Amino acid sequence: MKRVLIPCFIFWCAQLQAQHFNLGFTFQYHILKQVEVKNDQIIAAHSYSLYKVIDNRWKFFTAGQSLVVGTIAQVDFKKFYFGIEPSFELNTYEYLVGYPTSSSSQQTVRFHTLFLQVDVPTYVGYMFKSSNLFRYSVYAGASPVIPYHLETSVKVDQGSADNFDDSDLQHIVYSTKPYVNSVVGFAIHYASLGRLDIRYTHRMNSVGPTYQTTFNTVGAGLTFFLPLHLFKKKIYYEE
Amino acid sequence: MKNSSIIFLFVVLGCAGLPVDKEYNSFPETKDAIVVRQARYIDNNSTDVTFELDLYHLRGYDYGHIVSSSYFFNDYLDSTFFTFSANGQFKFVSAATAKANSTTPSSAVILVDESGSYDTLDQFNSRTQGIVKLCQDFITPSQYMLGGFSKNGNVNNQPADFIQSNLTPYSQDQMPLIFKLTGKIGGKSNLYDAVNGAIDKFSVLNSNKSIIVLARTNDEVSSSSLNAIIAKATANQIQVHVLFLGTPAVNNSLPKLAESTGGLYVSCPSIKELMCAFENLYSVLSGAANLWRFRVNFKPAGGVSSGQEFSVAIQVRDPLYKIDYNPIVAYVKVP
Image (cartoon, rainbow over all chains, first blue to last red):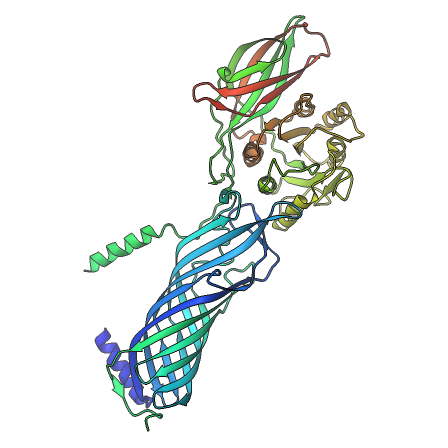
């Protein structure tokens, strides 16, 4: 199958006057995240609890992290390029809610999810500045995501977590249904060897029908291109 | 190679656990609770009185667990479990299981004691989850009305503050209102006045009428009397069920209120027994399982006379496994 697809893709690139076709690997680490439930209260999905929404902030590390390992195919068309990154993502989220214990106090309940995901970020980039060694670009696109649930857990700051169910935020901050993220990023390219980029992803739709929930993530990626030269012409910055 | 890949995939999926799209409801940790469904006078002579106890032994769980909507486990009970404490002699006449009459509470007023403080009895507010579970059991055609009561505290309307204006089946928009009761703690108990007011909430169209009371203390400041509300409830064919949280007072009048009206009484020393009662209350009242029926002959030291009342405190302990259960109280009145 690969023997057919890759030559076809290269042929297609040639027809479209593509100047480079690169294959490589990408590694990303996303540490700045925000989960926002746009409601004051959340009715638990699997227990008899009612939670207060107390923490919708952007947070480093403590709102969750993502590790991404993937492949990349990139085609350059003069100043523009088209990229696709089939990747595996190990994705965690942490979301804090409050459980009322009296008129003046509440228990902090921490929900944690762990997903293994297949992401396929697909984007178009524009190189706006170049030197002999570096080029700079911005890109934007969409990323279909197929999540596979590995784990959910719940912790409390005091008392027993048995009062709650680890799936209480199912269809509120997580589900197993595929979804789409939007992606925008800024990249620094190092010749044709690789690139360093910072990207922002935003989930396009809410997890479930009951609550409006948004997910935002900022992370950094490092990409290495293989020196295959599958298809190469002189590109605009080399001319 | 292809087979190996499939086996690997199955192992990975197996390790990852079940899919998360599952339909169930979980409930906090509970503890076994002995429930007096009814204490019934049978007969008497001048020296002794015979009465029957209908009991349930509700099984508790040491961990959060999935609830069953229509079934509960009525665990083992034996006459050797009971130690009576009253001035006189006790003798078991018989012990058997019996099928309870179905008394589905198709119409119920639930009253929650908001007086004093729950800081030591229920620090993490498990009880509200139990109340929500009970309210959720009242689906069409059953209906309920929920209110909190206290005097000189934070309850706005006297004698009780209700979340609905009339009896309705449960709907999800009531859940935040149920949790709002958590913030109204304080003041003194006006339990009798609240029950008196609750009796007036029923209409002649309601059937299988009951009042379910969560109490943490005896009545403190009511203007209504115990005998008056018992007479009013009985005249309106309303059973008053009492779930008592805490250490019962010596002269606890609440078993009398419950058992005189045909209601159940459960004494819960800790929140775990109360949660067990909340989890199973609707099923218990529906007569969903056989109950344990013990016939007891009691020979009080001073003899028996017409109109005499007995409140018999009973300690419950499994002698084989050395497990102490919640105490029960049998209230009997000689006609």
